[in-house]
Length: 120
Length: 120
Image (cartoon, rainbow over all chains, first blue to last red; front, side, top):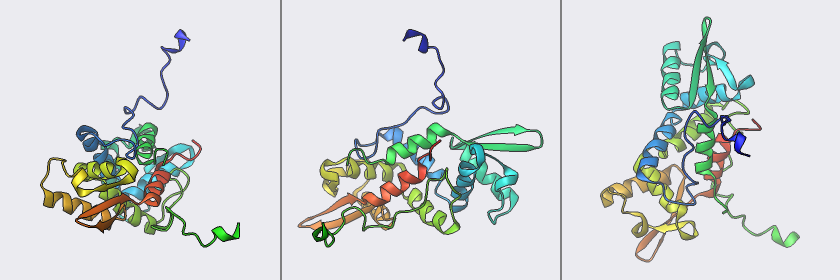
């Protein structure tokens, strides 16, 4: 048992897990500021579509080149991807010519958990 | 069996369920507009706290009088509750002196479903 303590936990190191479901306890002021910022990142249709394109892409990862045909200019795509990264919803990595984006899994799980009806 | 057909289905008549998980398929333009509006409703810390107070209140229902001490004025509380109602996240009903708010369950489930990682 004790030798598992030093193993890094996958999918939990990108963001601290947040908050019990909204249906189980009122959100604290601090948590509400944090979670509202994440919801804000998804509160734009183009941003939400870009996010869904990354999330649903093969292997959960996408190059800008794979996802940019959402009907807005390339600078606008870059701007939205930056917002998603700043909100902690996407991580990015440059490999060669392209930047690859990946959904931060623990953040998505945290948001889903918040919205899940707890035993109702 | 057949006599249950005429019973109204609770929790499914407030909004059509929306969209597969973001991780399973890219969101359509139409769905992205609809879902972004819901996320926008939760993209404000005070609104999110009000929503969590209704959601976590006994019986999933709360009177304005139960939830209004979030550190903003009563007109501001009313404004935020109106926004949540307009976004389809809360339903309201006047009974006597007070208006009672209730979380629209299918909407909450729809948002949680959207954010759930599909088999990843």
